[in-house]
Amino acid sequence: MSLAMTATLIIFVLIFILRMPIALGMIVSAVAYFLVKGGDLSLVINQVVNTYYTNFVIIAVPLFIFTANVMNSGKVTQMIFRFADGLVGGMRGALGHVNVLGSLIFAGMTGSAIADAAGLGKIEIEAMNDSGFDPAFSCAITAASATIGPIFPPSIPLVIYAMLSGTSVGALFLGGMVPAILLTVALMIYIAIIAKVRNYPRGERVGLRAFLAFSFQALPALLTPVILLAGIYTGVMTPTEAGAIAGLYAIVIAVFAYKAFGWKDLWQVVKQTVSDVGGTSIMIGAAAIISYIVAREQIATQLGAWIMSISDSRFFFLFLVNIVILLLGMFIDTSTIQLIFVPILLPVASALGIDMIHFGLVVTFNMMVGLSTPPFGMLLFITSGISNTPLKAIMKEIMWPIVVMLLVLVVITYFPDVVLFLPRATGMIV
Image (cartoon, rainbow, N blue to C red; front, side, top):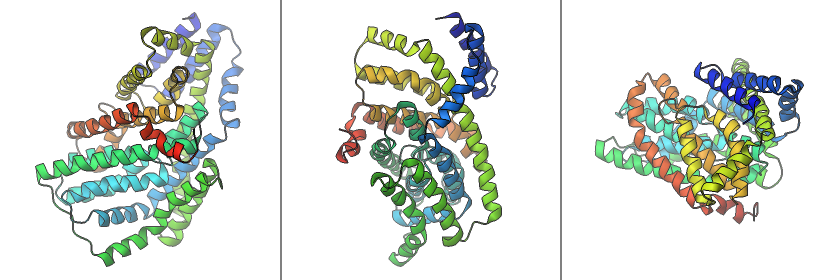
């Protein structure tokens, strides 16, 4: 390792230990690299600017963030909750199932785990607690089910992965459908078992007329993923254009269908979106500099050679990747993992013949597990904050849902056809 790279790593680790913003750490580390290397500091700015001016796909990220904020500000989340409640009827632990189904439906609109937990999650937790569920269990299920959002299309992490890897956004979206549904089913089986053991209450049966009324009210919101996915897969719109259409459609239904969105609400949504996008953009730009340095120092090539010296099995590599990302996810934010470590792993995965769509879903699913993993899982802090439930209790309750998620991760890791079936069936990949 060169002196410049050693200095870069030391500074980055120090900033991480001091708990300073990761994006700042990456930028400072990059500046240190060029100073020690004697390079032109203007390359730092060039890498950041080129990231945004040469990649049309990345524009979809702020558009989907805007859509999620609009959905959470209106009555959309309430409509989704009532519709999901009508679906499960009088099952034992019904509101736990509503929680998971609601997240799957909401996933088709926003692609954000944070938006799911903070918006729909608040309604779900309050309803479950009022019905007699343990607060820690309500929070744990909300955190676990929120991870469905970035796996089922549309998905913000998958859009970013497409930018990093050059793979098709549409194929990635299709690849995420089956894993998301598998996770939904697995979590519902877990809830059914716990509901029986703990004697959680049954839900109220909803008559056909009432269910049809709920469905009619929720229909404008439910059409969102249909419009998005139909537009993308028929070739009428790109994923970026679909993000713009989704944002406009979210405003239309919030204003006209649910009459729960005014100018003040729009202003708040715009401010929140600017704040969210600002943080994300700085991270992406800073990561572009680090990726440039990693490529220049041939770290990916050296890592690949080291792994090949141990084993040339793609299954061993995927096992190693899963372990590393799971460990990183316990301490580091998922965006940091995706933007710094994934670009290093991509050339190795490609050299081993691993399909980039499959690899993208494995990595993304793994990172979503990290959002719910103690001690620093973001979803744990969000659910604790919106419900005033002790974090320690949620961490104890989340362990079995994590086991469920890991079982699904094993399935999609070692059975690639689970991910690749739909992209191949539609002809998006061979």
